[in-house]
Length: 523
Ligand code: GLC
Image 1 (tube, rainbow, N blue to C red):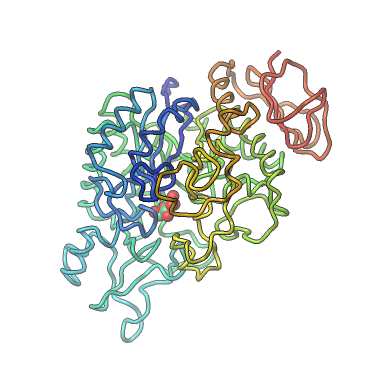
Image 2: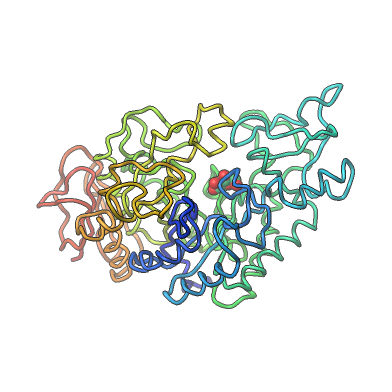
């Protein structure tokens, strides 16, 4: 029998991108002191857990996803002692703590990569990574044709002539998971943090650790020899045993961008990961039929393995959904096309984001809230090129704006930048119009996005929650019952409200449900 009682099955988890959350020491960069000072905002929001993006020492080539030491805290963010205090303070408020683990790669400044460079070809130090001779008569061509997900080739040559593999930036060498030393190391890292009280891990690039050791060239449409490889399951089974050996339901959450939901669900079998982000939901364009299809497929695939769905609208890698939903034309998301130049109507985007929030909060399973989503923040599109820091921007020579626009520091209070983010400015510029979107301004406004999230997160716990059953309320209306009734009107014209008493609405409603508006009703 599957245990249905775990906290993580229905948890609302708030993603903190530390650099941009709150700055406690006035250097313009968010830190742990900033988070500690803002824990009450999170407790007041009504979330169950925080997921912290990487907080380890890092040269910050990729916002901390280039880890130099997996057992310490980045000095810009604070100290290990502070992290332990933060974990304890969160626990006092009944908030659990999930941290990011980055097992696919490390920073080029990690001592193991430095040792590999020094030790030279053929050494055991190089076996921890993927070093290979190049192709061509003088080895001057990369060992295969793999591309970095950040643009450009996935290989970089070192002075002695060998090349090393990096699926992301050249400062993020990929580990060789065929080497048992890597497995032991990460099992030990898991224990290190579990021993310090963390409640779980979000596993970065969870589908990518294992590579086909032949490192074959890829053709378009081929199976990828670096994603969703069978050997991963055994790794996660061993991680699950470690998590289960601790009390208090420690969890493992996978970041997997896989095209096939049924394949992704295989990682959520009973003895593997607890949950994984539902990216099909995140990328879905603003279309009722498409949403219904994604939701049905998700529930089916997850039911088969007894795992809960985990709904997500935004994160630190994608265009904020207020902007996506407000775009003329395609409102979906893809890495290949960030639609940088399509015009955006923020009023439309905001109306839809409010309805999407009520949809997400109404669905069975868990959900993620990306910092600033609860304030209705949008993607900042006009960051000057010279201030952009995401390696995606540089590696694509600016053809992809990268992810800085969703990482702009949070506005907390006041009427001018940095809006209470800290006393020393903010590492990316905030729009002046965010004066109306500070946590302080929104807390005082019952019609704000923040008030909607607070009420929705509270009511979500209180409403009866049965199995989801679809309702047909006409074309363009997404509706279901699960103890209460949910309806969202995607069509261009108002539709009659379904029967029941309105518990919460994303916008003004009369006897009709207007376009892009969602309601929860109870009968
Ligand atoms: C994940 C992270 C992303 C990072 C990449 C490489 O996709 O979410 O921010 O750049 O992995 O670590």
